[in-house]
Length: 115
Length: 108
Image 1 (cartoon, rainbow over the protein chains, first blue to last red):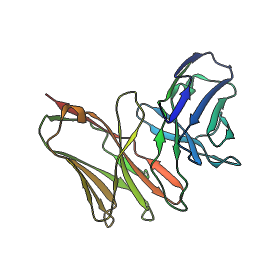
Image 2: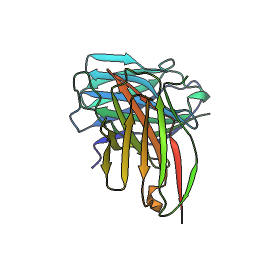
Image 3: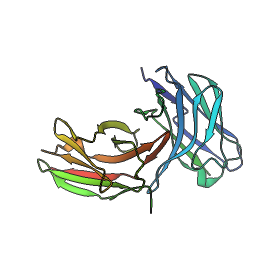
Image 4: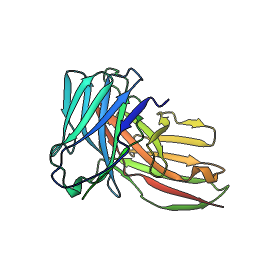
């Protein structure tokens, strides 16, 4: 079974709709991240969370919000989807280690299309 | 100047050849360095960490040059299965920066 799961895997929606992407992990990691990936732009960080009470904006948080419901769950919401939010979205986790970076484990991705 | 830069490629290399690519970083305070591999439409996965002394894992060798602020990845005896995008990752404190990736195509 996958350690980091994302639902849905694919979603097509219309402009103005509210969308929630969900991420769950069984790795027991404290840190969770949401990224989007666009052709030619690489991975860009949207939001990240170091524990249940900690939420931080990333590079491109405008138009998105997140909720860390539990250590294992981190959801990303698009309150009013727009076409330029069409992208591949990845959730990732990593263990908590003071002051250093550890390997990130990515979910399989959600392909979102906003018409 | 972007914080992490990679040649996007694609590098088209015959099977069995050796290929190398670099990644440059702009912040001298960067602490940790990694190479990730990403297959088409799949999630990135850690290929290897990059240590100051250099490190090798089978056909893959990673090097760090702090003076010139770049890391490199060398693949020997390339296989068709090495075709992928290779992402350079640089971190300092809790900030993580992904390069845009270098595409590698191994040709039969």
